[in-house]
Length: 224
Image 1 (cartoon, rainbow, N blue to C red):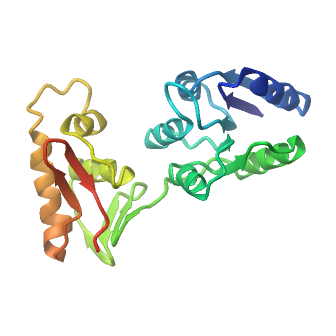
Image 2 (image 1 turned 135 degrees about the vertical axis):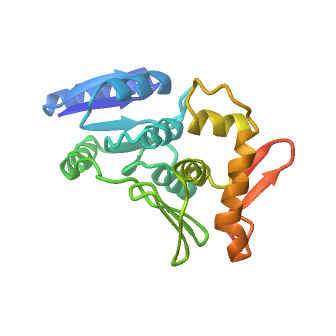
Image 3 (image 1 turned 180 degrees about the vertical axis):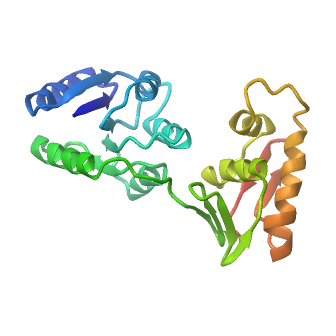
């Protein structure tokens, strides 16, 4: 079983590497989130042990990026952050398990083996924002039990916002996340698709979940 350890604490990472090798794992180590993300994209691992607090690119961002790219390698977050909100954030970004440091090594190995046995999930997590439900696997959208039909591009814009619900995303953020890098059209195309979404997911239901933040961009919020 091949495992990637991503942790900027070199001594800790090396200790984990040696221990896992002794248990029969093949182990690669990345000392920061940027290198970890690159390795996870280039190599098919059976699991990833991922630290959270790293310079440059944090573990939650690495996890979120991999899931957005539909990389479903099992991820075990291994961190000193032990708050309930931290655990919720880690799991919500797509991690499969969350272990707080310090942890006894036999326990860590057992959790890792259990993660590998479960294997890669076959589908992404359904995104829920208030009564709005977005299913990236089936590409279905519904408000409560009412299905909503979207075009492929409308769905892509909505899924992008739903994965970052509550966070303000600029036009350039949305363009970069939904359109190709070679797109050279008018950035105001984003406004067109935001208007389409509002006409389909908000207006018929008397809610306002796609919110304009003047001078900054857009964010998706739960309907009250």
